[in-house]
Image (cartoon, rainbow, N blue to C red; front, side, top):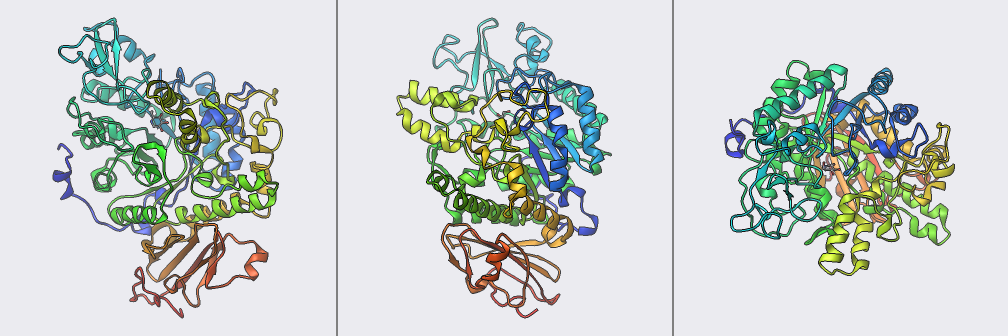
Length: 621
Ligand code: NOJ
């Protein structure tokens, strides 16, 4: 089958998950590690496997079920490891295969699973497959990548000669001129990341064999990088559009054979062993209709996907580098649409942070840094704690599998980058060069946007304690090693050790959220109903499973907020709050404090139904 939407829509399943018979990952919480910035075990300033191993107890204490490792394979690191030169080895900067096996065993011993990053839309240009492919037009693996002649009438390598007008995610054309063989190759990301040709069955079989090799080694699944881009459509020019996606995405995002390829991958790699595994596809530019297909269990593609609509809601008309203020109503409507759309049909992933996104508490919360700068350290910390936990609760108490990104669990913030020399990421550096040098933009405007949106915000070393460089190299014999990227200067006050020792601990709040997902079926499986969709401060919803109704009310603003009657239940039991013991004594049932989240539960008669906007549902139970 071709997997086009029309063909497949009729085959969608509609089974609401049965708690007694649900896959393990429906109750799981995943923690993402970005290895180069997580922990440095050998004191060379670069995170590594030994460092990860030394911090496993932090993750076990947190209570997470799965660790997702961003790429650790040999790589020239043009895109921090998302440019892989050898899929079946470990980059010496991170360690060895033996150390990997030890890490895997140590993870399993602590009752956690480990999934690998699978980056197979493209390889590094230093991968042996590409070295062969570019060696001549008749090379064995020429067709493993996507080679095209210059545009008719143009001389290759000159402006306008690119085969199509598609843009790279990292600025400039998506086509790279190869002088030696006189053709262009497609690279949707950096020039050093040539796209594989998935229409060639040999490519697909080589990828499947590699995946089986990792599963045989004991890994528990994969996070699949931009997996919805693997099937390209027509190589034609597209109409200029203004959106967060590069020009041309309509020709390759969720392309014609992508569902077919994922079903084939499932048959070839996962069939017969999938009960213990989990898969999550990263799928930029994917509408709900395709998500239903990707995650419908009866279609056997992937368990869940990362959708991108909600993290694009603070992008302006010019996309990511044109930041706009988030309208909470839009975010609620969007997330509710995904909650409803995948309910009983597929499965949601839940995330607001990862290595490609600015820090949540700075982006949508209040990271308190303005207060700290004015000398109010305690006030700043209080606001940071409250807003980080309020956002965590609204995310984690939705239906789906939550993902936590390193440092999120104790409220790491964005970074006060000064000038362009402070940025490391290929995306940021290229954007600055294109905007300022080629398009004449005011550098101050470009820097202002970069500070808010750059992926570098997420990539500074994890702040473990208040020792030199935030304890990033603690445990090595060179604990003062200079990290590859400077630690956020706020590490002396914002760090894991300080948070865990604090009476307002973000870490402990996350522990509780994770525990709730493990122990309360309504959190894992309850139906989601949004309340007060038009409210500008309040994110409120119910989760319903049988007789149990959870009511989540969060004030996502720095001003107090009256609780509408629809968001109150008489006789409800308090399940979770981010108020301190003292503050709790003074709670007003009708008002939420700034950034307060209040989660309550009621039991309703089995026949009663609780729907959005039904104020009396469950009252008096
Ligand atoms: C998505 C990854 O998350 C991102 O970090 C990377 O740059 C691109 N894919 C290319 O692999």
